[in-house]
Image 1 (tube, rainbow, N blue to C red):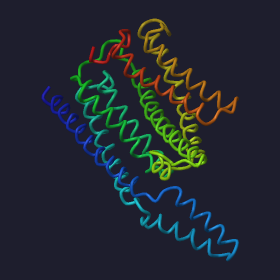
Image 2 (image 1 turned 90 degrees about the vertical axis):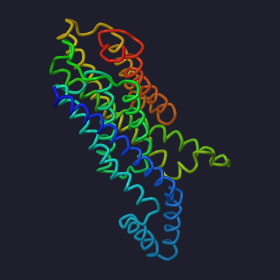
Image 3 (image 1 turned 90 degrees about the horizontal axis):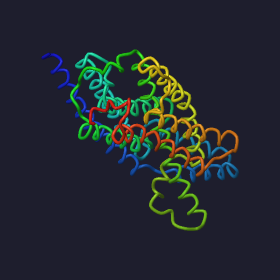
Image 4 (image 1 turned 180 degrees about the vertical axis):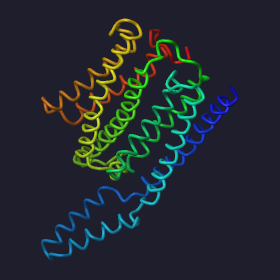
Length: 332
């Protein structure tokens, strides 16, 4: 009993330590964003280099090579702050992973028995999804929009959803808890990543339209200069949602199989089941519209954000507002 209490205490402290580290990472990403040179400057340099190549020949190669050297040596404006943000992000994720493991050891089970445990693990899933993408792409520009929902999730978990660890209710004592919930956690991370990119896409397209109309860039002008183009953001959001949709389908199907084992039926239109299915329908509509009707741009973005809103309501709203077979939040 004493060791379990100690592990729970360690888990709580690691959550607080991770929140502090995430806050430092958020500040570093914000500084990197503010100091960054901006997409427009890069575009201008490339256009200028192309024009010089027409007249002089090899000068453009020198200009582009200098740009590459700047990136490699870290002299690009804002790069050092971005690197600090990424390093602290890795540290914060490691601390949060330790908190989740300690929570599970203190309870003697997987740490997904209530909303507090699912929340801290979902925050971990968001962080891991971002860090996995960062291994192949430079996504420091996305760091601030990822850290903010992580901090909000952890803050809500600590301030509102916290509950002491307790034994699982009989219906949750199954290997399907590991299978179904782990898939849902990965989906939470990827859906959040896709939503963050979609929000940036809407900001950039708004700026592009205003500039094309001869108006000032507005509040989002500085943001639009420091992130990829609208087309690249649109493609990244589409690829992210395309990746996670089959996994969400698996999570829904796994939940139905688990329901048959626990309650004797595959589907009973419980509020959690219903909103999981609604989320699936909206994301299916998003992918179908893009694949068949060629929907891109704002219409597709609106459907994608609607899907993420349904996912969030299924996560928070259903557990806090409705009673059902899935009422294991620990706060009702």
